[in-house]
Image (cartoon, rainbow, N blue to C red):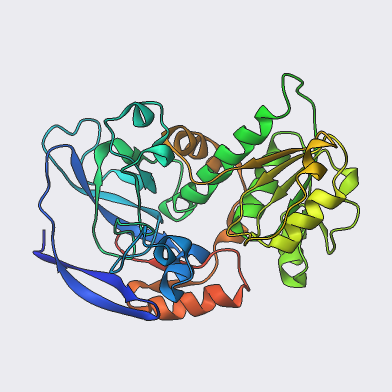
Length: 341
């Protein structure tokens, strides 16, 4: 293995460079992953722009290597690692706790006081030729899933967790639900596709005509406006737009359940009486854990994800990839980090 590797390092707001770094030494229980694909997420752009809340309140600090939607192969495994060997195709969990506390033992790393988030909060991510990770957060990719598709595992795991939490509000009754999915970005589209695969009836609400066309091409009902929300049993809000959130609450039927998958929603006066007085359920969900990654790897082969395979760029063209992602003309822009994988 080379003594150095390349990585995109965000050194501060609006400052990023492709740098050479020293290859880290493996400790027992650790794995070095060689990313093959790295999906570009809106969070990556927020880190670069300095807009992400973690960096505003000091929870996270620069410099950081962005990226949390990666797939790749094991480059090396440290002492004591079982079940994974060099060359194995893998994905890596974004949210990583200490691995020792009671919360981590419950697969609840998001609540671990020592948690870090790969490429987001105090942990380098996948815009790099090597990524260091504890073996406990690395998952082998089944042979039937190409590595390009596997790079969608992280956003799909986020959806799996959110929909599980939404299902908890439905109680024991299991029946097809009408679901309004607000936002036809990657997370919203994945949520709609998973809901449809489970026998529900999703409709994607998206004001951008190009994104609506993509939803229709995926076989989904697509609407332009937020009117008619009272006709749905549940609402999945995947934009983080506070106006959309207020419209969802105001326009939903009594007894509706609402899943919030977007960020940041901003600070607004909020009439909580509109939740309590109409039996509505408002559910927030962020990130994912081991259970969600395993479920995502099971679901991936059953979904037609061809529409998610948008423009591809080599690692050194990360700025072009960011520009393509900002244009919002495709569902997912990706960096092809290792062309040999």
